[in-house]
Image 1 (cartoon, rainbow over the protein chains, first blue to last red):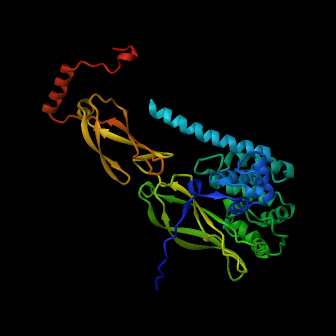
Image 2 (tube, rainbow over the protein chains, first blue to last red):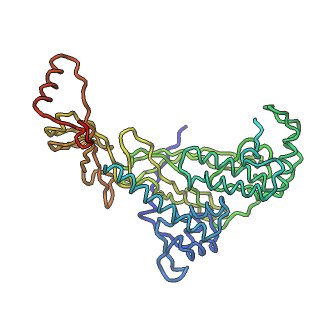
Image 3 (cartoon, chains in turn yellow, purple):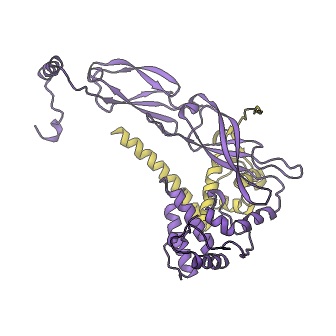
Length: 105
Length: 313
């Protein structure tokens, strides 16, 4: 017997999704306190004045998850993880520019 | 099953102090962490490091492991009798998070404690969201596609052991999705308890490597071979796209490596990417006297020194 599955629709997080603090905590399986600290250290930058009104852009998901993995796996502290996330993004940007420049030649 | 030498994995002596073990782990973890090291073997290496550290950093687990190690015959494929019984663990420590599973060796020695720890964990008020990585074809990102996606989901079996169950989801991949982006599937994460809604599932997108196309964000690059006379005189040539083909006018006097932009023919979207065609001049080897004479005639008609700017004749 075969069961016919319905096709699941989805959203592209980086383009169509904005998240509340609670959404982000659940999506990353993280404590609210820890996410508040990531905001304080500038890893993620929500819009809105108070935590209950915060709105996170879709790209916060990736940065939060990378920061949490670095905190856990490398036993980093928050400023260290925040610095690493920024540097990783910078490396990715420079690699793209380098590739583009190499192709220019 | 093979004995796993966790000391060797971390590169420390069997009598290494807790501090030595911590330092060795941190140094190697920085080197092989998949967020920091994009080499394909890094992730496997990092999992081994994590497993070794999980055991050796915990005095109780380390003692149990050392005890098994002493009784294991050198070179033996078989563990000593009764090797995996009699160890008790508080549980709850064994959590490797996103990078996942333990080796069979670890599971056999510590697996039961881990499964119990998971079962005892209180059910959260709302179910967890799950994450997975999926590989799609570049053409799927051009056209959108319906794809069956197979996921390995950890579940508890009848005896309380964590096993991986396979689950297939039929997902509508939206056109325009790019590498590194995430798709959210509402309600497809962990099931909810006591009437709570289920969690969501997040899929991180990666493209299956393609022999022809290279992808950079929204832009796509294609090396296109052209004949010398097409490059010299100009020609209309067909360019294969991930979702069809398009005709391109190669301008006369094009050199090797010339980059031609097909605006908006990259990955589609609100701001569509561009497709860059990089010309590769292909030279046929002459096989007949007539062909060789034709090349000689060209050489006489068009004096040309490709090494002129090297200062060599």
